[in-house]
Structures are given as structure tokens and as C-alpha cells.
Length: 110
Length: 111
Image (cartoon, rainbow over all chains, first blue to last red):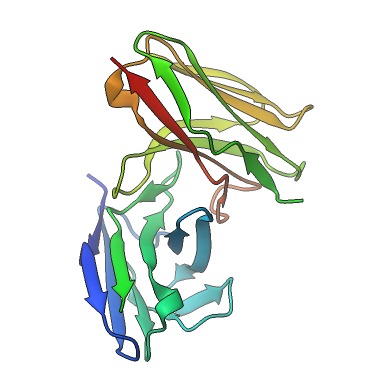
């Protein structure tokens, strides 16, 4: 079966610290992968998407970067977190009938 | 004008009521339409997936797409307290493209 895993579930990080969030997909190959951020009152904002290994497209200029080192692995990173990076981060992929989301990481930058 | 508009609510209904949730959009290229349910502090869960215009039914849920009016709806029959959640509409021009989301409608079903 096809599943998507995302971790950690929650994270509290100080301003200026680095960030690494990981997402993996099982049961498929060469999926399109996405990182979204959900902030209160702003809906889901697409941050990055990837159609293959090493292929990353950025939708929003920000303090974040993404990488896809393996076919089914998608990583969201930051070298120095800002307060404004706080939010709910969601990884997603799209099988043929709709997009499936991971369980999300709630990041609080303090 | 945002590409996808959705009334944030909150919408409060008694148990057993029929719920109607709606989104409007501006991009006529959108062909794939989805509804997600999101419980507090959880990832969105796909409820309905529709291609182009028409209706689709799944249990208590019915999705409608009217491309001529650029308007989509989700109906929930015999609503239950467990339906209390935020409902997000989403759409894209092509399968594989990133989704455009509404901001979500908060629904509360009271016993």
C-alpha cells in the first residue's frame, strides 16, 4: 500500500537554529512531492515541489530550502530559523486520484 | 482577486442537518477539484476527488462542480458530531500540478 510518513510531529526551535524536516513515501516510485505550510488564517501555501531526484521548484521566496536526495524522500531545511517560520508544515504527494498529505509537523520558533 | 475563495465560517449546525459548503474560483483552467477534511492539528484528509463538471457521491458526501459558474460544493447529509472539522476545497489545472486551496470552512455539528 502507498503511505506517506512525515516527522517529527512537533518541534520547538530557537530563533537562528537550523531545521530539517523529513518526508518519505512508500509503495510508489517517482512521485511528485510537495511541501506546504499552513498558517492560521492564511490557508495552505505551497513552498516547494519536486518531480524527481534533485529537481526542486520554489514557489515562495523565503528562509527555507528543499532537497530530494532519493526518489521517495523530500527534505525541508533552514540554516537559520526566523520567528515567521512558525507554522504547520505538510508534505504531500499525488497518486492518480487526489493528493495525499502527511500528518504534518507543527513548528514553533521561539 | 484570489484564485480560490471560501467562506471561513464558522458554520454551526445541529446533528442530522444537511450541510452545504462552497468555493468559487477564477481560473477557468482548473479541471481537478478536491475536498479535504482537516481535524485540529492533523493533516488534511481527502474526501472527494472530481474531474471536470458534474456530481459525485460517496456515502453521506456529495460533491458538485459547475465549471460554467466556477463554483463547487460539498454536501454532507445526516451530519454527525464527528463531521466537526475544517473543510478545504482545492483545485488544479492538471493532474500533478500543485493545488490551489481555499482557506477552509470551520464546521461544528452539535449533538
